[in-house]
Length: 324
Image (cartoon, rainbow, N blue to C red; front, side):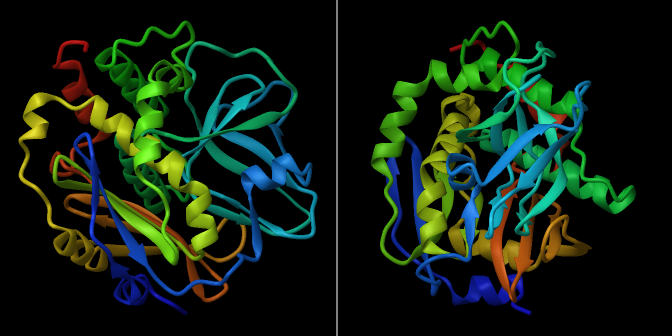
């Protein structure tokens, strides 16, 4: 089985591109021309999958995913689903086999709504902003190790969204993460235009003001290209919400962060769908990886730049600054 270390050692980093304080370092590697799965967006658009509440009453931390097609479907950590009784984000990466119904673990990103807007969920084609995603990754790892569940701390998720809304001067009637993105869409579009996938690129390191924030790797350049824009928006939103003192933080070099990922403690779990779920943890790092078909399908690792503090403490840093 291909390990995380093997995967990282086979990657070739390229020179970074910088735009308004954010730098993206491309990572190149061998990958199949086309993956043997559909992305969630492709499956939903082709009516080969659907996502609904688990029942008419619904459950905040769980949704029902149905793969009706002949191909596997990849659900990626942090992806947002909108509609039904409230918007949610997926808690970890899952590869759902063909013709399979499965309950998937999610977190609510719209605290003020619990009423139907639609019978099924749609893909928002965006991901949770990176700072909150880092906190969630840390929480999911703790829960998997301690209770065997895939839950995040729901109150902490809401806390981070509320804090980011305040930092970016966004007023949402339902406390929806979607409203933050929509309010700053024009600014985020400029970031997306600045960073484009290159041939053979399967991943990237994302840095804000010189400090590495996270690492994203996929098993296919096609998959990475599909997800790059939402990843750029996810990290860019964190850049927009930064405090002035964070902009002066000591940079974390690319090589140092990569070595930290290689040296992280790894806990192994059977995946919800196909493969094996690996949870990564270190003093200032959290993340997860899905391994299936003898390869790392997706790896996400985050720099817990407040020294391993909980998401709730990181949320207080947002509150300590005035609204922009």
